[in-house]
Length: 267
Length: 354
Image (tube, rainbow over all chains, first blue to last red; front, side, top):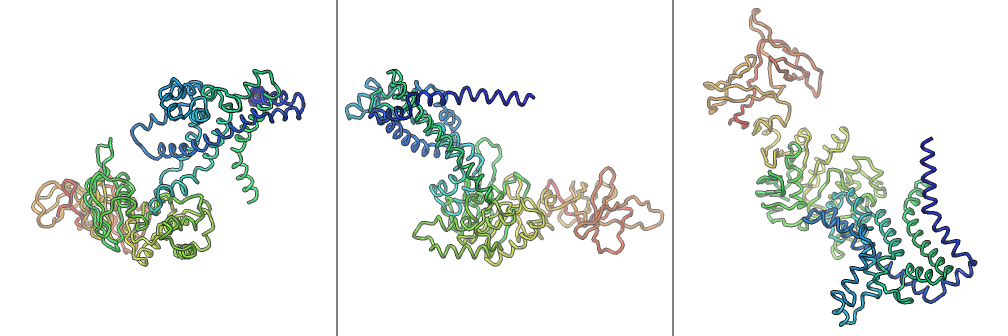
């Protein structure tokens, strides 16, 4: 009996908190019909926002994957002074409010910031420009690859790597042929989480971007802009698109499991 | 290829005792050496140091008289087999075996067909024909072990280092792979170092046994010398069951404290003073009564038969000691007046009295 109560309660909670919002977003977007909804996406500012979001996400995902792998590798395979501290540091973005992390970049690279005037002289713009958005997104999405890959590497142990080294493999060969294939499931998972987070980041990006429509407006910022301008169909269409992109990234995470199950059935 | 270890010390920060305490070892070309000792003795540490996997605080390792500094100096020249095989789970058996060849720089790497031929050759040598396409997860323990060996041998090393390679195998496979390994060593002309905690395995397969204890080499000798002249009480006990009789040497005779054990003459040069006589259960004899009046104070209780010996236990005052007689001995003396322990080795303060 208790089991069914818990089961029903969990489903109810998930329905209310997780399923209703996207469903409402979709209904709002399609309020005036599919045609009207799709038409809002052809607006140049909307397209610019979509492209910017995609660009920023791709760069953030690539950089965070590379550094995430190396950071996880160093943290798991070596014992060095300051290791504990580094481990805590890696998780910092999870606990700090994104707005605060955005402000940090402004403090460093804004016009009144520490390096702002210097960079201004060289005509390099970071705050209120795309590089600032990328930096903010990088900061916010840093922990995901590291945190998903680390436990699997921990289980993997060092033996296979040592065997590879003794067989004559170099550093990159060991990483590419032995370490990474062993953690590929976790790595994919981390990459997709990073993607989902990078697509949707609002707080940190909002602070550094400057909200210049068509230039430094990512999808989440554009949605806010549209909503505040009472263009609810356009706002919700964009929101639905963003939710769809993020959700497909998350759904892809379970793809390897499905594939494995499919293969098992065949075998 | 000969291996020489000179004054190796490995110190780990925080540990009071060094893992390797001034270890020196010479392994001539073609030798089969077993490193034995209780867990924590430093056997694996020494093997890993020889392979270059761990850094040492001081000392050096020479391979054919030339010093090895990094693990790169050894790449392809030393084969290493890990305790848990350490195969690459995502690669097929063939790719596992070919790994050492595949990672060679393009200029030195053999042609694809040549690598394939080498893999076939090794599969045959390891009696693994037709297994090349399988993944390690589909193999049995013994097969995985042989794949690990094939991988270690792929680059044609002259030195083979084995870390408890039979630990995870069942006893029957263990025995057969042991003999087979010795044959492999002889046919390929390898220099092999085997780490094991099983002294029987070491005695069977190696021509030299190095006994280690707390990071030091206690004795380095042939199996026969080790049995006849164990350097310390620890070696004597480690190599097989032993019964000890504390006592005192007086005027060239060892007089055990236990009245049931007969005094015996000690070799010349052993000075008077307290000593411990240690003996194997199959080296003891029960003394027959001479006259009818003698009290039969020793009685051997049968405990079954193992490895060609009848096992008995003897009650000696407070303690019970093992006593073995060969199965084919006609009529075993199972009761008597005293115990003849004249084949004992004598130890003083833990060391063999020479």
